Amino acid sequence: MKSGVIFFLAFFAFATVTMNAQTTVVKVATVSQDNRVEITADQLPEAVLKTLKTDEYKDWSISKAYHIKGAGEKDMQKEHYEVVLRSNDRETTLKLDKDGNVIE
Image (tube, rainbow, N blue to C red; front, side, top):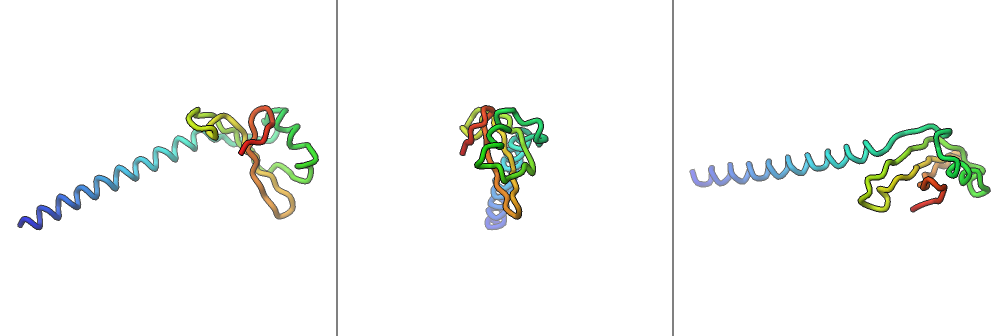
């Protein structure tokens, strides 16, 4: 009888911890998706487009672009733009601030 009660309490504790961990993961994923909005290339700031027209990126074309709205907690959570570039069969993603500076 004691072992049955102990087993039940252990199972209940494990299930509670597992449910809380899953809920936390879902909340974090939702927050990051709310801050990322797909935009068209012509919606990029002029400074970003100017950077993408430099010799360094002249052979690349814009495949997708995203406006990342800042959350303010970490450096990468600041407002910026992610641009997916393609050249032949290669693809790369650049992160740029509103002034066209490449950020890492």
